[in-house]
Length: 313
Image (cartoon, rainbow, N blue to C red):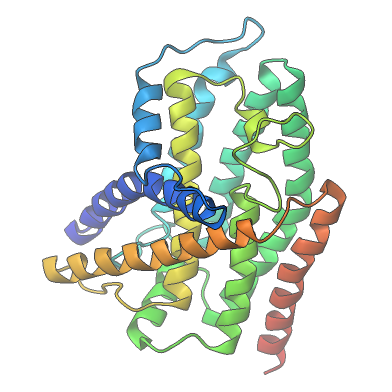
């Protein structure tokens, strides 16, 4: 393992931990503006995480070790997955890092343990949240596989680093094929991060909550780790989308000036995308549970169309 790659691991992890809570607050700020409110500070998520880290952790008497290890396993899986998606610098890939299949397995591992933790406490709300999450996963995961398969067909590679290197080296605007993939990735982003119209991460209504139901029994630093995991996951999927569709700014050589420019460009692109997500959520209502497949079908259709085009072209 060379020095540049070790430096990439440190830089990528530090940046994503530092900026992920910012975009959560920014989405809330945009949604508040559309409703005529000033909304919370863009640093509110940081304040919330710090407050939770200082609080005591309380476990249900019915819970097992699953409840105790889930926050650590979830955050670890998401942070390792984050290494597969370069934020500001694309190094030469080493080992299996960057492989799409392994990336999807890491996301599935985090979801699996979150659903287990929802069941582990023995609460009705946690059980409903886990059941709904697995029901949605059984529909969206095949679609996610097809979307990433379309990416592999377009770039002729299973490695995300190779995809980013090609788009960064070309520096050209997104092609129609990439735009269709971008729409599919945006739908995956909305579903995987439990945003409206799939779920509302800010509600605790027992008849509608999915993600919140699974973490309802978490408290203190464990809840902080779960919230941070969710923020990091959203930033990872945002980075995957914007660095493929809008590749300008990402560095291909490790220099201080290049990294600084890439960080500024990435912050600007992610802030714009966070604003788009906020506007998208504000313009839609939460869909009924059995209406969700119609949203997934759009991503499935576009990705399948791209695969057919690539196979027969």
